[in-house]
Length: 214
Image: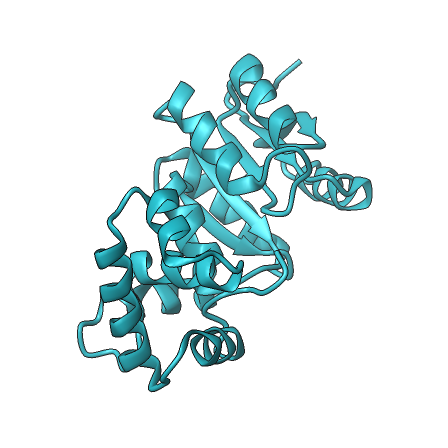
């Protein structure tokens, strides 16, 4: 039975130890109550639809359906759904994709418990909740004078390049023309001060713009 006025939280993470830890932490707060636990992305979509939690805590690396895709589907069904990403990944591509999918918050798993509690409460009020490191990255994208800052679309293109996609496949994947893909790549090369795709991927991975192997 949910306590009157309590914020109903759905935990979506495929690691039982992590779920147990989050549930135990939230259990110390009278106004936060765990109403469900999802072990996969598709499970999270189903439970979010059935339970309609006030806030969902979503890991990005999930089986069956990745976290960002799960967020997108949850928001398609309920545009007002409030999802906070809680993950170990902090690359620009991960952050950008999650925010584009509709996440209201983005926290790293080493976030202090008090910050996690405050973020859940803020999300329940409809306010964004970003860890300091993530907030800094997001603000840097908005600065026109930020050296080497890639746009969200450029990050998507470079992420596709890192997966070995050709320009033609990238164009189809992102629903843009091959000419547009080439233009994005030229901008990427200029911003990262490189001459080819391999160098661009290497530099971007080193700077934490994209994540390789996932």
